[in-house]
Length: 198
Length: 339
Image (cartoon, rainbow over all chains, first blue to last red; front, side, top):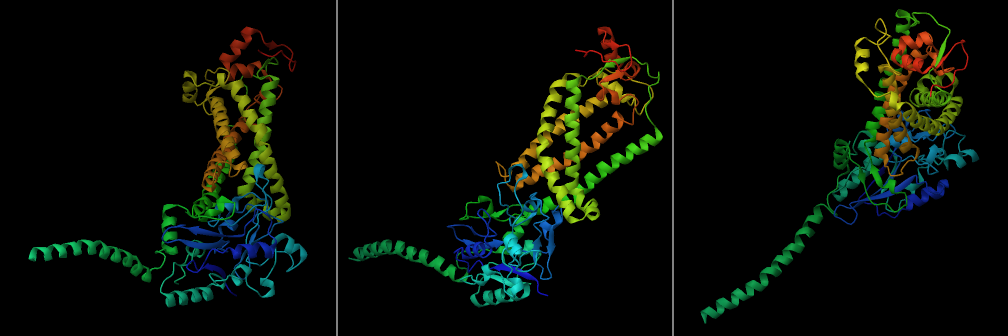
């Protein structure tokens, strides 16, 4: 089985935010929730980089480790998913997540945040694949259709890569070798305890 | 003629030099850019440095949710370690340890009896307002404590027993109860402070009380006014601990209202640690107020305590009350409030 990962090549990302828009549209993500966003560091200064970031589907995921109701599970492709029928909206996963991935549909005063929502790697949830109920709760399940996440698939500069970790790391290393530079894979050290180099 | 040529050369140089410098100045970054375009940024180095320093990598974002500007926030790791390791150990040892100590204590020391036996005459210890307020705080504290412990230990203890869906229902209702019962709890803490603070100021008698090991561990009964040193400790643990738990809890109930993720993590750490220590302390309080001591429960039950109990445990206070004539002859009869 593949070990699915995201890799954002920040030297290619042009901050067009199409990945954000595609994600919202594909999964009909409600207002106020962004499963993916583009962060620009060193804005307007030398070393400016834009990075598209979402749930990184960590190895030993912190969200799963702290969840008081154990609603997270990891698929055979190492995609980290959660069961919204079990989530109590406590916010602990948001405290633990290094990437700010967990989102809540409401402001959250008096603990009324609603069920947590995050990037599913376009893999839906525990409901029956591509059923109506799965789509309503989690959005499309492209993985079940043999496709990769839409954000990466439609990235115009192919900055955002999704797929088996070894495969996208090889693609990235070839790019770096060819063009002679690369800022590395953002979040890999934190999410996978490794760098893209090896 | 020679001087003129030198002068013109000097003039030409003085004009050319800045131009040359300008040309070099422009070409220098252009050269540098060939090797490292758009400046040098290394995700690996930045992440490693941020992890070491506990900082946050953040940047500009075009969506309204400003909190999403944080790209990588590694301090979540420290919070995870606290929640999963530190809190589980501290909470487990504090709560189970206290239960163990109390059971051991009951087996060895047994119930603290009234030496002179019950006299049948009673004296008012707590009036209706004091008792109602005590039970408001006590009732909400028990629910707050159990639902709080459930968030840390429930998935290891309760989840395997009741199954995931029942456990989620319990936890979700528990969360709602936890949030809303914070209000009567906090109100009760404030009322407690107003009602009892004046009788709980530490004094010289308290040192004596500790030296003699109280009436519990040691033999005999040290002098005591309305509250002895042990009760004063419980009072201040409840009031000060309750205040800290209330403040940190309300920061968590209203997320991002003047706080960021790091603040909320800190609030949770304070909230959780003080809570488990308070639960341990209150377990001791529940023990000595119920099975641990004969006649003690009446103080918060009917509000009327036996005069012999009062004389043994709070001799100075009892003498004061008897002088005022607040004694009721028939057992269980309603005495008028001491005030």
